[in-house]
Length: 251
Ligand SMILES: [Zn+2]
Image 1 (tube, protein in one colour):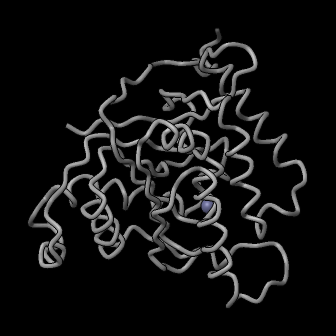
Image 2 (cartoon, helix red, strand yellow):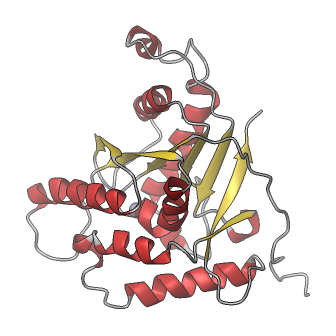
């Protein structure tokens, strides 16, 4: 291996096996489905409860001339339908404007509220880092959602003195011990989930986002190709598909 090559798997994370609830925090409708729907489907099949917290309603997305005022409700409906495909019925939209997301105190508070309400042992969100070789994963909104979710997990949600209005709403502090990041730079990814059994549901979930994906007839092949490549990178048996993550343990 040359000095410049990326080590295939530099480190394997240890993940918790006592997880009952996972909260997913993303910037846009469809982000969870591109990055993690196969994993979510595996979790719900195993009896883990999963809830989605989507920071924007994707009102700046789309590829056609759908009137802008129709886009947010359309994309919320698409995300809700896609969630149902992978066993998720608890979907909340925070209503921040698409394309202008910043990791503000208000966003941190609103994510903290969802953490304290749902009380997850794991939060899955988007990496706040720039992944230079795949800029599509590093949309500024994605990084803002990840940054705010990170701050909500540590320290806000666990600190009873942060966002005192949440205590007043009857939401006591809650400690999340583990985070999974999607779209992290490759050298930081240290865990893969085998999605061979759930890839069809992942693609079916993506198909629900018709306003984003209907013009891409190759989306199933593209997603399968990525899954196979990830499986190979993590040493799964030939032909197995995977989604990959950076796992962060917070003591
Ligand atoms: Zn996105």
